[in-house]
Length: 550
Image (cartoon, rainbow, N blue to C red; front, side, top):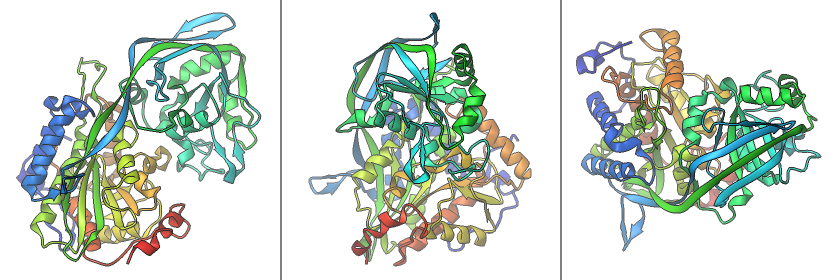
């Protein structure tokens, strides 16, 4: 699938219909921006690093050049280009001592290989756990509305819980959690939070590639470097002292030595009424120091002020950060460049801003929000949505872009998850008009709805979606699109190999971006307030602020 990056090659694709009244976008400019943002000089764009400083300088310069105005924090009555985001940064000092003991036999666990423990986010300066009992808690779910409680009858104080990733329905496709589509109960973030609420000393999530939707390399690279969180009044309320992942094979062997059958217990855990199981004569120990400090990262915000209703806001969003510098890969590369994830989304954000700046001023304001610390748990968007620069009640919608496809044109597109809303209905209609079919998230089991920066807005009621590039390529069809996606996840996602490639045409992006432009432009030049579906869990939250919208 090698392709040369040149306008002539882009024109060789049988392009589908362009979105009506939408501008054309420049593939070379997108490529140049992605290449720059993902170059080694940006050091993987880690928050609170020299790479962040360079990223902010570059993106702000591009937004200025594109014709946007600053839309960030107010200082002395004037808007800055950034919004300060205070974050707790925690990092393990040295090599952590980790081990399992079963029936008196001790086994040392290698950080990053058999286990991946995260720097403590509960405020602990040192984790010193000695022979803590281990308890298998199934999927680690407490869902009263589903009459489901994996913690019934168990006291986890002073104990380490072991939980499966995803939902109880994942393997069977049927049950109380919506079948294959992941609910928030399936996310690892929820499982840590619930373990803290249950009083557990720690939680280890069992890694399995299919239900996690990514391999061990992603787990290792995402969890063994510096950890970040929003600054919390009571961090222990949502973080147990120990948080981490453990390899499936290690877990299977652990259960076997403790006289248990992992697969049999997993099947039991998929049924309502499952009871947590203590691993007999099995304990876990950990010893490591944690350095924690509050740092300030930055969201970047460019803005076009509305001509008639400037207090009403449409937001385009994308995250600028990636994993920074980390453990070397097999080639010795330590820079996690993040070209697709998410230099592509940042470049699209800049170029959408350029297109709007050249057009007549919209009636509503448009904000181009480039958020920090997505890779650390959607923290930049979480901070913005908890302390918004522009009120959420009068935020019309959020259109998020994360990891766009720099390859060829696709006949279809998707979104992260399939939460029903009028915003999604409009996008589907716009896509259809451009000759693109909408496909429901082809991998709902991966829980993408909860993994992109639109989610913190959605859970606060703002209609929000995250665009997903299509998998039915004009050249090669679904087979080629799916193969490329699988290859990316296995070999590049959250790995140093996510680098700009000269073969990328960006034809797919310049084909898709007019649809995204039209969606935001129509909203910005109307009095419409798209709403969630009546059955949506977000509908009531939005309805509660209805009086603030004209």
